[in-house]
Image (cartoon, rainbow, N blue to C red):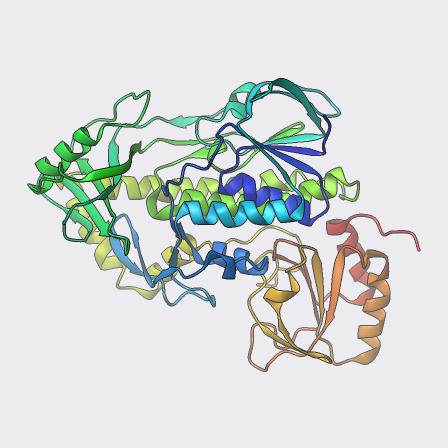
Length: 490
């Protein structure tokens, strides 16, 4: 069988990528070894930028009622996230299985094929495409495509088969984690005891998540998850509380390993999510990082396979996202020391706690943890919006009101024409005409004092990042070609 893109892994990242590919017109088959979703919720925290992205695609309502948290943490030290520059500040607690279900339904509605119970066995990569040997319920089959993307997690088969280098450090310390029903323990937020760290939070359904690390204990090589008895014993040694009478729903452990592939693309094979990087899941940053990678990659890869990508567009996936992930891995590494370090880490924790009293320090950390301070190098004159995400802004058009978020729902580029100068606006619309199937023109007025106040026009990529600010009509065509490919013949 032949398709345009194979995505390996039907977790949140793979499903988000499938949605983006289909939205941009590419054919995609998602290969997943599990017959059914696990129903587990290892990652449940969405940051502001991820919620913005989901809002761009009209997916927030489908998530249902979610728990909002205005606060976060850095290495276990409280951090107020409510003041970030977003209409979705703070953190949103969404069980991973719910995020997966919403994304799988949307991917299916858009026409993605999802093959559950199929496992990648071998991979052959040529200059013009890939051949994947897949084993499924009815035996083996060959699947051919132009490109294949590994979204298959930290033990990525794609990464190994395609020969990606995965440098970094292995785990030296370990944190137990379990969702347990039938226990009564007080909620704890990164409570440090003499012997270790304990975290517990009871959900509305009565299930309590417990996490525990014993200071000085080393990570163990494991073929599978730890036993619940092992987790309960560590919990008792740290807190003195007996949770052995509880019923574990699932149990796992994670360490402080810190690795990142050297390249996000090797020819016709690309990686996203935990297949590309491994870090301790502090604050849910791994999930958010992966979802944002999928949104960065999807429109570019679709443009490539559909023959409309400008030269170098697909390579910008690595050049834009590799540094972002490297920065996240660095801050997660710092947090691992703050969280899992024993009494000798207390002077550093006191120092940082004092630094958090300064606005500049808080703004730096909240911008980083929220994902809102990501700014790509897109060229241009250095305007603050260039390369940054398009801020939320209400727009008044001739037919009513809309918003910058709603303009991105269709998954294409957007040209906001905000100029009161009628001649300039007509000229820009004429320039845009050969790209009308790729870029949506929106003529609107913006409120005074808003983020776009005073601007003439803004060109936005499908992922919501700004690539041109106030280009005159005679330069607009160059910007459109650079990001959306050659103009279509009239």
